[in-house]
Image 1 (tube, rainbow over the protein chains, first blue to last red):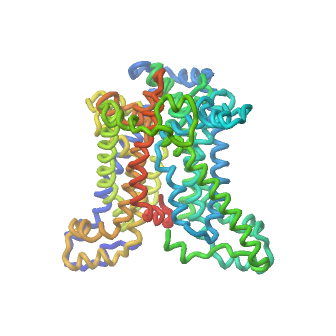
Image 2: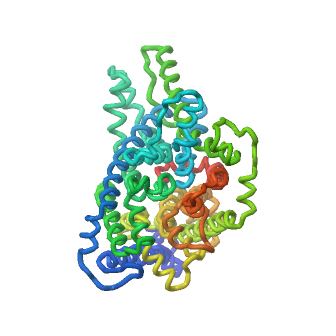
Image 3: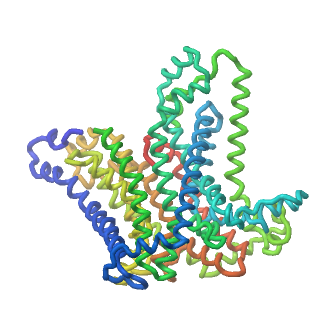
Length: 302
Length: 290
C-alpha cells in the first residue's frame, strides 16, 4: 500500500495533512477503548485474583493463596478434566466431520448453495436453544429412549445425560452439532484455493483418489486446519452457555467446566478471589494457544 | 461464494474407471449429506414438535406430530410480560450494540484498508486477538464498574460490553470488503470535489453494502447468543430472553411446552437474518474472512 497523500495535487495542503492524520485519528478511539477496557479489566481481574475479595472486591493482597486454594478444590479438578476431554473430542470430531463434508461438497453437487446455507444454520442459534433442544432429545423420560421404547424396543438404553460418567459426551454431541457446519465452510474455502493443475498432474502420474487427498490436498489445507484449531480451541475454553442449558453442570458437578466454575464461585458462592483466579487461568490457557499462532501468522506475512 | 464455484478447479473425477465408479461415489456422498442433514434437523424438529403440544401429551406419549395441535404455549409467551419482555430487552441491546459496533468499526476498517502506517498489521491482529479473551475475565470488572456508575441492569450496559468483542470482528470483516474497492474510486471522488464525509456515506458505503451486511449479521448474532456477560450485567429490567429461559429451567416444575416455544421464538430472528445475508456470508467466506 502506498501513501495516498503523495498522489494528491499539492494545491490542497490542509486536506493532505488532514488525510495523513486521519488513520491515526479514527483508530485512536478504538485503540484507546480496547486498551482501557480489555487490558485495564484484565489487570483488575488479575489484581482481584491475588486479593482476599469475597462478596465485594477487596484490595488486601494475599499472594498466591487463591491459586493454591483453587487447585485443591475438587470441582476445579473436575472442570479441568472435563475441559480436556471435551476440548479434545470436540476439536477432533469437528475437524474430521468438517473435512469430510467439505470434500463431499466440493464434488459437483446440485443444490450446493442450499446445502451450504442449511449447514450454517446451527451457527445462528443460541447455545441456550441448542442446549435445551438436545437436553430434551437426550432425556430418557421424554426423548430418544422413550421413543425407542414406545416403538417396542423395550431394552433400549440411552441415558448418558443422567449418567455422571457419560454426561460430558452429550455436551460434545451438542457442540459438534452446532459448529461442524462452520468448520466445513472453513475447509471448503481452503479446498477451493488449491491449484487444480497440481491435482491433474498427480492424477496423470497415477495417484489414486485416496492418496491424492492424503498426500496433496490435506497437507495444503494446513492453514485451514490451524485456524479451525484456534477457533475451536478458544470456543471450547469459553464454553459456558451450552453447559448451562444442557446439563447445568450436573448431574452433581460431573459436567462442570472452568467457565461455569468461575460463574458459580464469583457470583453465587461469593468467593470472588477464587473466581478471578480461575478466570486468569482460562485467559492464560487461551493465550498459550493464540500467541504462538499469531506469532507464526505475522512472521509469514512479512 | 457462487463466483468462486464457477472459477475454481475441482478434484478431477477418476478418468479411467468411467461412469459407474463416479455414480457410486456421488451416491455415497448423497447418503452422508442426507444423514448429516437429518442430524441437523433432529433437535429443531423435536423442539418445534414439543412447542405445539400440551404438557400432558409431552409427558405421556410420544407422537411424531402433535395429536391435538395447540398454540397455547406461544400465546403464553406473547401475553406474559415476564416472557416477552425478555425478547424486547434482547432486541434493544442487540440493536444498540450493532449500531455502535458498526459506527466505530467503519472508520477504523477504512483506515486499515487505505493507509499503511507503522505497525498497522500488528495493530490489526492485536485488535482481533482481544476478541478471543474469555468473557469470564471481563464479567467481574464490568459488574463492578457498572454497579458503581449506576449502569447495572440497563440495556446500554450490555450493549457496550458486547461492543468490546464485536468491534474487532467487524473491523476484520469490513477491512476485507473495503480492500476489494479500488483506491482510484476514492481519488476520483476527491478530484470531483467530494468532501471526505460525503464520499464515505454517498459513494463508499453503498459499494461495501454486502460487507456491512455481513458485519452487522455477526455483531447481531454474537450479541444475541452471548449469555455470560448479559446474564451477569442484568437482573430484572434488562434481562435477556436466554437468561429467562435458564431461570425457568431451574424451577421444579418445568413447563416444557412454553420453554420449547420460547426456544423456537429465539431461533426466528437469527434464521431471518441469516436468510437475508446468506449470499453475502458466502462471499465473506470466499474472502477468507468471517
